[in-house]
Length: 345
Image 1: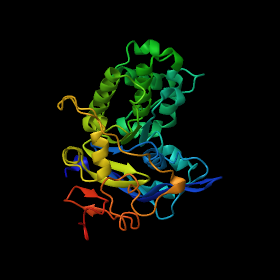
Image 2: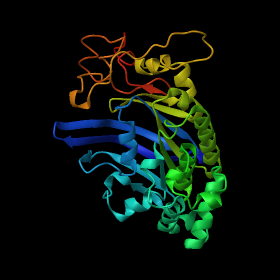
Image 3: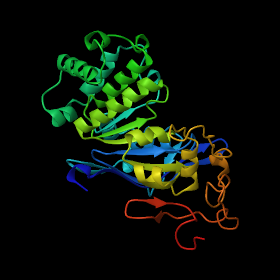
């Protein structure tokens, strides 16, 4: 591991539950992973797998009825030391300083993130001025409204926004979907964060714009040296953008490792199912095979392995009784499945 790939964010045994009228919902169940500087960790899984909840816990954007387990750790390593975000007050000053400063966030739908009553420029300038001390430490200089506006224009130009000096005074509804997403990326990167969280940022875009956005994010990551968490349900997108991948199912990580190795030789039956459902150009007229069944409700979490109700390789009496531990496959890969490790058939 090079110095440029040092661990920047480390999640240890993260658990998140929601107190609802129907009962306690366990959305994230003992998740651990590491995001390294200059690298992208892809977190992939179906809707309901807990991937967005896990990453929103990092910036403490969970609703009021959410509870983070006392034993959870969310460690962010900065130049001035290490901070455990899980132990900070969710509405405290320190979390606000981290959110948007050290940690940037790109959401799936920019129209839900930008205020419709303020221009793109006003919202970018507000973020820049709010984090002016952090930005000064990162790139130097001082920021007032005039310099913040010029910095916002430069960021819009950097993400490929045409005629940025005009666009900065427009409202979100005046921009196309692709332009709004570029503006969202410019906003997230305007404070030069060390960690960028991208929550399905290309799902609502057409294929051509999606490819442009992915290329842009990779280019900016190289330029700024950020760590990136990229959340998606699409293994094809993971193959394009992430060096490492963690596959989530019903709140747990079931497989992790370098993306190329996981895609080439998937170990967990769920990972194989996700890849079998992915269209490919090199196999001719191959019928796509969806993962059978539906992901269970967190309110009705099955006993044993969470995937056993849909698994074609389930072993009755084992998979439906015992939760599999995390079994190392080699120095960089692991899988949580009874097909591996001690007692495997």
